[in-house]
Amino acid sequence: MKANPKLTIKQIKGGAHLTYEMKIKTSELTGAALDWAVEKCIQLAGFDPDMGAFTPDSMNEYVEIDNIYGPQWRGPAYSTDWAQGGAIIEGEGISLDKVSETMWIAFRREGPAFSEESGPTPLIAAMRCFVASKLGDEVEVPDELTQGETK
Image (cartoon, rainbow, N blue to C red; front, side, top):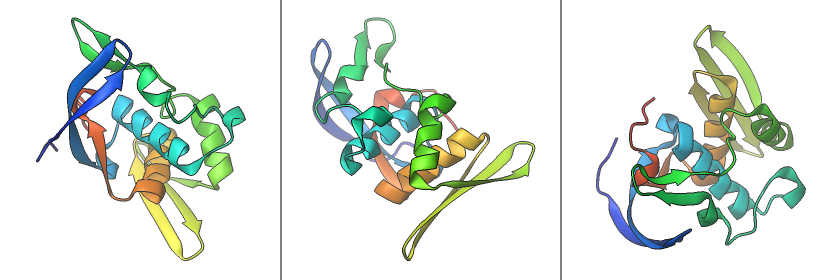
């Protein structure tokens, strides 16, 4: 999952922070990395602020430095909270299909474009589908948000 990191300097709460950005397959995003990517899509798409989106410069305010654990995502939990992820599913017209007890498929059609992703829960599948429809099959995510995350 971790190949060819890109070194960048991010302005985050507590000052500038040197970080690596990792290119991750959208189908492998989970946890904080997935929620971060969803927030990135919301900001790029210019969603209505009443839906839970933040101002363009506020995203990094939700990454806090912890001296023990390093940077942590403190933003919305789109992939686990139906109040946050559900609004995206409805607003983007994402459809869900349960294919087994442990697998969901989410798909979205926008004109001729079609996105489909899977996940162990409906919210994870839908948020992966949303990210894939906006950013493609791979996403650059801060390395710190991917540590310990797996499919």
